[in-house]
Each structure stands twice: as C-alpha cells, then as structure tokens.
Length: 296
Image (cartoon, rainbow, N blue to C red; front, top):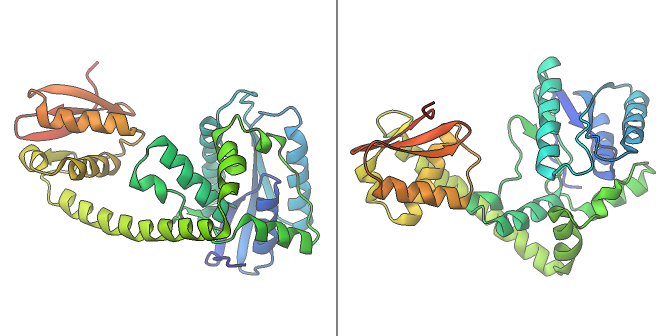
C-alpha cells in the first residue's frame, strides 16, 4: 500500500473501530519510532455505540497503547457536521493534553473522491475539490490508498473490526455518494477523477500563493483597497474575498454568502455593515473594506 508515514514523534490516532482506522492503527503500531495515543469518540448516535468503545479500548490494550475517549450523547438525529465538530474538539483536546505533534486519521482515497463529489454538489468551489489533505496538525497517511486495498490488508492480516450500521444509511448525503454515485465510476473513470483532483491541488496552491501576495500588499490585514478590488474581474474578486475572509478567521461562509459580500463591496454605500460569519461583519467604506465585530 502507498502509505505516507508521519515523522517520528507522539501522535493521537483517531480510531472508530471500523476497518479503516483498525488497519491504520495496525500499520502505525508496527513503526518503532511512533509514540501513539489511541483516541475514540462515542458520538452517542447509536444505542450500541458503547460496544465500539469497548472494542477500541481492548485493541489499544492489546497493542500496549494509552487510550482516551469521550462521550458526546448527540442523539440519533445528529448531523454529520455536528458529529465531526464534536469529534475534532475531543481529538484536539487529547492532542493538547498529551503534547502530541498531530492527530492521525484514517481517511483514504475513496474518502477523497467522496468529499470532492460532495463539495461539487454543495457548490463549494475550487477549494472543495481538494479540501481533504494532509496537514501539519492532521496527518492522513492513507490518502493514496483505495478502500479495497484497506479491506484486503485487514483480511490478509486477520484483523477484526466493527461495522457501523449507519454507514449504509443513504439518508446521509455522504453515504448516498458512497453507495449510489461513486460505484458508478469505472476504473478508468476513478483514475481520471483522481488525476483531475491532483491537478486541481497544484492549481489551487498556485492561486492561493498569488492571492496571498495580493493580500500581503494591502494596508492592514483586515482591510482591502476598495478601488483595486472593484477593478478585478468578478470571479477573481470572489476568490480574493474568500481568501481575505479565511486569512482573518472568518470562514464558514457559503457560495451564496460570498457572492452577496462581493456585490456589497462593489455597490454598497459607505458605512454599511454586512454580516459575514462567526461574529464578524464587513464594513464598506468609501476607499476600503474592513472586517469588524458587529455592533451590539
């Protein structure tokens, strides 16, 4: 398997008990220079989820690794986004408490393809095509490994794992993509999609670098020169607006909200405020745009 192992150090490994994370843990445990903490988050979505925690606890004990867990009690109707948010809050707390270099997750190639398709359906733009990546704080060693190879590895090494029954529920959009859309791709189609995403990743890095240069030339991190912004082609202005908001920790906007802000930046009267997200608003001045906390 094409696994990209992390550098020697201490890491928090997110283990759900499913085949992906069980295989990941098995691979990592065999590396002598990695100090691992097994972390399991019980979302409290399923009534039998405590069985997964017990299984992962025993797995950690068998490998002689420290084990950390928390219970979310989110309920059966919890969304994927809410579950992910609570899970990462827990994982980051374990990372901080153990002074670990990063969190390691079992995301694989099929997850990359699913996420890209999901984000295309959601209209998240170019960044959504390459959102699932290896990062300094979150390592994903299996991103180049297809699900089929993970299952083959588990079978070959006689590993045990728990199947989450909710993974087959196509009421969840990701599961629908996984079971109804992705299987329609032939081998050649999957390869072509992987190639497109790889090329998009290169293009995104280049565009992000150019946008960073433009932002660096601005008079203050939370300001944009309005005349220069208004002279940009609309698509470029939208990309610059998105980069500016991300730079100032004002993420969470969608495509519709981003379009609204670009139009406001170009047409609104001075001193008008426009809500962005996360307690931030954009203030339109005559000569510049600024970000500020909303007035009470």
